[in-house]
Image (cartoon, rainbow, N blue to C red; front, top):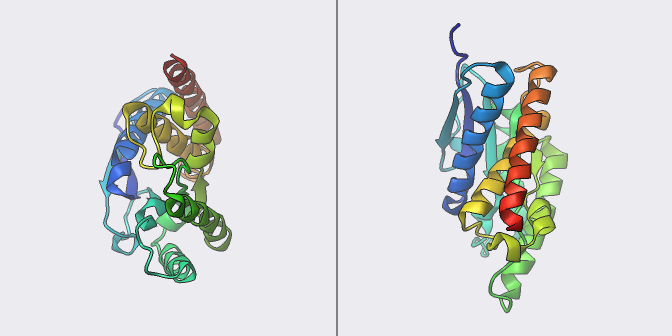
Length: 210
């Protein structure tokens, strides 16, 4: 039995988030391999911008993040939103059907840096609007990380640390399995893969609690 062609994850994220995408690609490969009973390769590709993503013959999932805009304070937020909307709408098929936007964890280690906290809040709200306008899914890093808390995770909006990378990776994979692979994999395979992911989260939760 030959292995299926690799599922490509096109990642346009901040360099600080790349460990999370590496963790996500590894977790997704483990989950899908277990669900299908054979090797299921994942190809992770990092790009500089959404506009650089080219059409592919196989299936691609696009993961991008608004952390890229954390320092872009000279541009009006409505201009940032319009730029992102245009880029998301112009993604080549079939990538456009499986595009995801990561939110930003709202914890800022420097508690006096209220400007960064406010910008994160506005960018997260922008993610919701972009999802509504373009159909892109939301990977809600902020919600999941807020559940565990910055102290337990020992991280902030920059997602530093091994546990943060693994948890962010798990969050990314869970969203991809929930809506990014329809038409590519059968619902039964996706459900089996989700169960594998649940087991990973349980083990990760034990690590966090310790």
